[in-house]
Amino acid sequence: DGGITQSPKYLFRKEGQNVTLSCEQNLNHDAMYWYRQDPGQGLRLIYYSQIVNDFQKGDIAEGYSVSREKKESFPLTVTSAQKNPTAFYLCASSISRRGLRLFGQGTRLTVV
Amino acid sequence: ILNVEQSPQSLHVQEGDSTNFTCSFPSSNFYALHWYRWETAKSPEALFVMTLNGDEKKKGRISATLNTKEGYSYLYIKGSQPEDSATYLCASQGGSEKLVFGKGTKLTVNP
Image 1 (cartoon, rainbow over the protein chains, first blue to last red):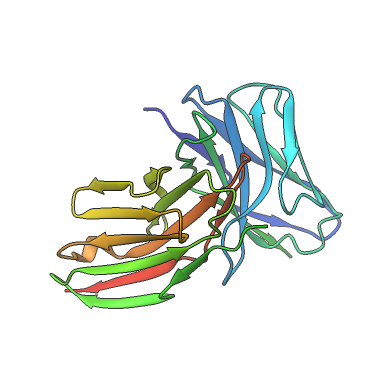
Image 2: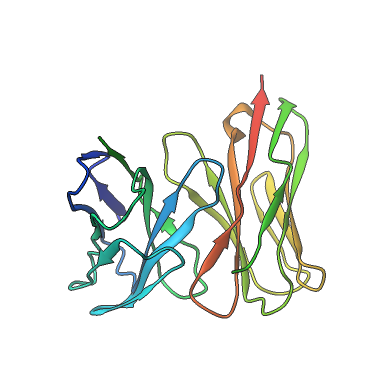
């Protein structure tokens, strides 16, 4: 079955560590996105990519980095520069710019 | 950044009731309006994307309308069932790739 797989489901990070969240899709979608959810707020865009080897910053990119070496994969690294990384992270993809986003099940990151 | 507002923030209805909620968005530079349903412990599920003023979309007992001139969309659920309990998100898309999401309307349907 086609879909988006995020891993891990839960992730704990010590302060000062970088961690990488995985996002894989087998839908042959060109566009992929990373969102962050905090309590009481709407989903906010971190980074997005419309094509392999290209990506753009979203509204809250500071302290994050991404890569898009393969069409299927769009990993997100939360760096030590991100001052408040504890949040729920969602990856999504879409077949086109106007297309509905298909979401993964998310990764909950907690700084300990 | 666009400002997308959803109301009400939460809603409790009885099984069998019909209900509706609102998404307000800036009408300038409009490109598309998305609706998603997000059940607890699951992925957000895509419902509709609408682009033209006057668009109406339907999926089972759920339907949505769009008014781009005044900047609002309504989501309707006919004969609510407990399985409809979820948070309903709308997102406005301007002239770029980005979606701006509202905070959602949390619907609880009591049996």
